[in-house]
Length: 264
Image 1 (cartoon, helix red, strand yellow):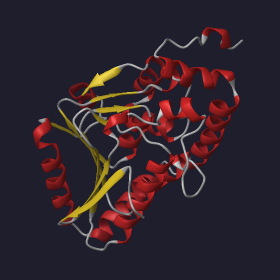
Image 2 (cartoon, one colour):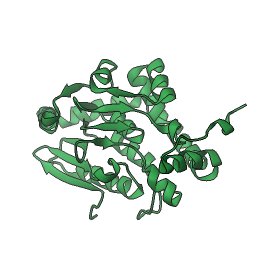
Image 3 (tube, helix red, strand yellow):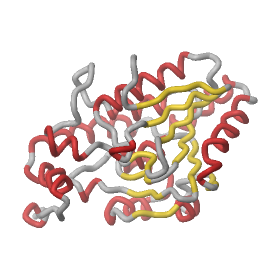
Image 4 (cartoon, helix red, strand yellow):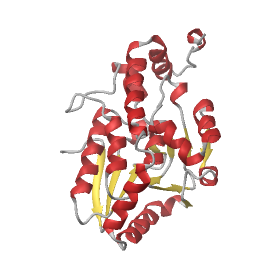
């Protein structure tokens, strides 16, 4: 596959996948997701790769989630070779690849981008990074791994705060909450991620594989919930006025008028 939205390189024992849409704050469209799945599978098949580093291009953003501007323009996340928006498969691939995935968060990790880093095995954050959710602000949600697994990471109260209020949190707060393993100066971020990948490469790959699968086994039931949630999200965003209002308001740079959709 020739990549347009990402970059894929291998340095020593680490495969580095870089989301490369800085003009959209590394927000992903269907093509981006498809390319990332392909890149993770390449890393999976490469016996010389012992860890994968996931990061974003530029200094502003790791990833800000689904491209809401694209959704407002076309009503979907754009074309892909499969004809599908396979974000659920990307989540599953990050969990299933039998090698640790290290998120190197270089800036904003918001919305679906926040979900990606949460699903990674380890997170290293630049001291300039910021974390948070945006789904309910733009007519979207992740009622699968993005919420259920997040609650396992930070606890129920924190997870509900992150989703209900859609605030942004600095790297130090994220570390205190257990969202982040290490915080380093922005200039040192990728070097630190490569260092951690090197430490992993010194360990038994078979032991690492079994350990990752063991950690995942405790939450694998959430995959079924995630499938249900993605189906619900598809219906909500593409077939309801409320879902369309969030994306259109974002594109129009105005506050969405969600009050008319209040639940009874």
